[in-house]
Length: 543
Image 1 (tube, rainbow, N blue to C red):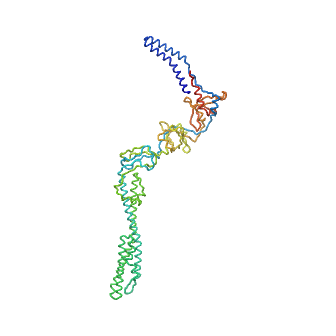
Image 2: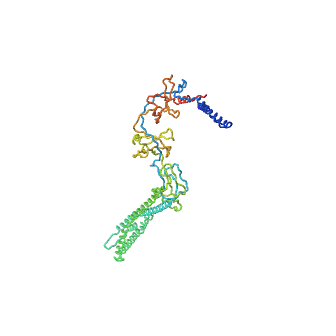
Image 3: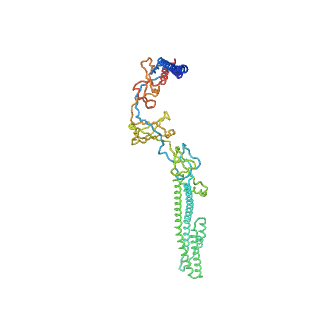
């Protein structure tokens, strides 16, 4: 309602001042229509005199009052409290403007490690949040395809080497079991053959049956012996035949059917065959474990080749589990033909969780090793850079005890905390400033890259400043003011507005740089009501 009244009063004053000019213009128009130039000059002079007379009659605007006295009823309802301005000790501050930038330690330009062409599949968008390992784009890369095929070839070689090593190990174990059985049989044969002067030797039937070649063959029929089944058992079979021949000739010699020469030949033949059997056993005792060792070496070399091939893929940025690549489970998928696999697929993944700041990848684009496809930054912590004037260098805090507070016009009333990281060592000669760098947490992501911040540097040193309650300061005609009580007025219901210069906000109090002194009493509450009454009082009355 007060706004409408003020508007009506102003319109009335404007109309009063403009009326003489309107009359003069009307006379001019009449002169042009009826009397010519002479009549026009006379009427123009008359219009000017009339306008001057009207302005002389108009009253100058009344000066605005700075005091207000409340009625007892309004004063009781206003609940105004008084408080004296006081000195508070606060940290010395230097305020400068800075800018938010991404943490350089948590920002990366994603480039391909192998050349390729961007597929037309889904590509991550600018501004999108991505998780660690999330696919940003997929390329078709011949280099990656060659490395994948090489890995599969090395895995096949490893699979073959493992089968060879397993086979050699089983043979070595079985040979190690066969040799003692053969040596035991040889010893029984030896112990069962008595010597006499006439070289007549006989083997007890139970020993011959127990050490027969067929018994040993049957015992190891289900065990893998490889070529040693032929060499060892053949040598033992020859020994068994030689023993049988020796026993037969010895029996005939004992019956005086033949002379001593043939049994003697049979005996020496058996001894030669026995020596050959012993040498065969000795050679098998060495060869079987040696072949097993060589197979193990070949297996380890094949594993190294697979690891090398897998690491080459990892160097290109392809996620490959090296342990899984050399596992036996990985060998089960080698039967699938290579042409059925998408070996040229090259996924570009995010190295860590963050936000995509820049996206340059487009479908069908040829990507070289120097092309930046994406720029990703982890914005959970951000940096703040600013240039501090050399006049404020003395107010900069030390790194171990300095705290930084920041505000932004984007978030009125919100204060952000930061930690000073470094202060430059060189003064910029052009603008006489020193760079500073701070870091702040940004868990909710409200601090955007490029956002302007007002940086307040609180040093360990303190200073005393004059402060009043924040509710005591009001703005009248674009000027900060407080209300001081007029002690001469009856009932202490009169107040006078006093312009002040404010500084920083200190919680619920405001720094006063000029306009008040320590101990000056002001209205700590109810200042807004006093402002409203003062504005209404200064509005001109409508005539």
